Length: 112
Image (cartoon, rainbow, N blue to C red; front, side):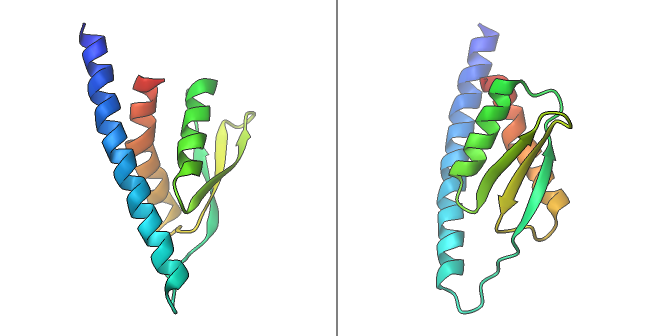
């Protein structure tokens, strides 16, 4: 019973977070497309996948790709890395990695 409750709470919480993230990303990209001086800092960032399963890796790559401003490029299975292209590497790629691990990986481990 506790496992089902945890899954349900995580699903609702992550769903609301992800909806907010997609809306925020859409507005951010639209603002930068229309701005005279966009705040873009594009780049490629590698994320360590650790012990994520193939299913969890697929979920992470898909969710990141569906968020405006990010695109999953490749999964390096040998080194267990996910390479993503992002329009926003600032303030730093390390902060981007940390936010993805904090906001996406934990819920994905529970949901998938």
